[in-house]
Length: 639
Image (cartoon, rainbow, N blue to C red; front, side, top):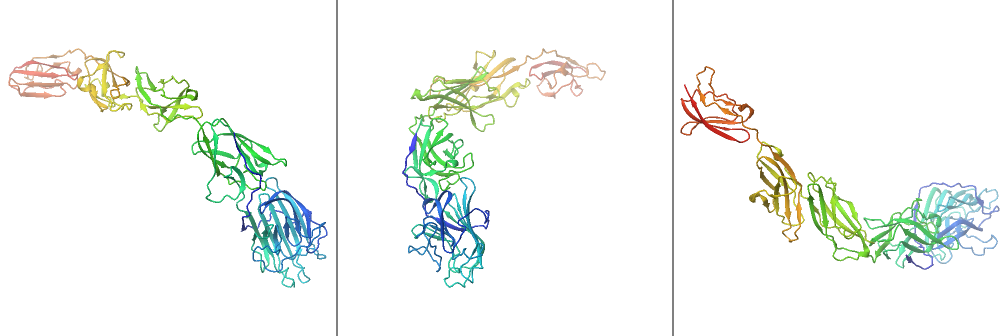
């Protein structure tokens, strides 16, 4: 377990941004709790409970004081006792922060001017209330129908709100802010929207300061720009000003650990932490460490100071993982005590899983061969060096049928299991690549081995199975294990043994994977391709599938040539006649004279030639039937 320890000092920035926001008065301007039923001019009241911890200018507050002059302040006003104390009003235009006491301290001004709710019959009220549920609560202060100070001004009334959000945002919403120049002191003429720290040296102003016009339906917000949860170089998660571009910290955790612990130096709201589907993610671009749950410890005032991330198993995969903070299963980000949140999906640091045993030498495929035309046998080398107490097993991969990627299809947990017979492949119609990887404890897999496929022998033209064609083209896939591979084309007549090279001139082909094969005499034959490791001399052999074909025994010849021809037109022996030649379509017939000159030829003879154009005498006939057999003899032509 890695415990990131840190100090206990609260860290929060004083960097705010001021924005004009949409005028959306969600919260009513009436109701709530009156600050005092007897309002008077230039008075302080309080303290009043905010209802949650509110961060302001680097400090945390749970109560505030409210002035009749439009001020919410977090420190006790001067001369304050029992709800009394003078609250001064703005006289001169304020051009910036100062430390001489001109500005109220530790205060929200919104707008600060000379309001006088004590005017008899003025009808104004100041109330406050808390709305919403943690971690999205708001503290709302309403100034309703506040008269301006001065006999010629107190008929002019203003209504506005100061809203404190639990996440640290301050919002000032104005329905109406009048201005009145007929006031000798000037407090009904000026008006200032601002926030000021406890020293008066840091202040942010809204746009309603210096000489102020009448303002209607206006809203501004003061937002703490950098109060977000970030890891810091002192190995603590803090509420800090994380500057853009700053290097993120690195943390180390040992293999075999399953808990990553973080101690916060600024407390966290428990309700914002999802313990089942937590906000923490650990991701290296390809793999995410699965987080099972989160537990935490509490401070005496029921806040969280430490979080324990429980992984689903002991960490066994070395690497550098981004630490991401995002929304958990509850849909919320982790909230600080003032509602500050991490940036959704933000990277807040890196976790390095170290001290894992690794075996980075790829395994080596030994051989892939087809056995007995039935299945593929795959074998590989056992590692030469291996800590066997870390051995988890092998994983065998096969190329998918769509040839798009490899997929694991078999695992082995015995170090001596270095061979497998794949019975699920159709060896006579498919060739697949195989490779293997080794699994090591705390490191799921080593690099993959080389890829080797079985040899697939095919006769793509179909001529091997055509009994009328005496040759065929044979193709086979390249064997990748040894290069260059020498292939032997072998044949047998029983399909089980007595394999022999087909012929010396076509049996060995150095790199070719195609050959013209001349069929043998009638019978049944099996063909295969075989290659031996002549490159390294390992003695290994890889064989292909088998191709089976038949050369049928030709039917007996029941042919007879009539050797005497009398072409006189009497219908008897008028033509060159071969009995039963119609049973052998496509047969060729030729006649030659005594000097060897061809006098007649037909490539598909049908007993349709009468030699009326030839002189009487003896002629030589030659007949080649469609299965290739040839016979010849002498005929006589008589006239």
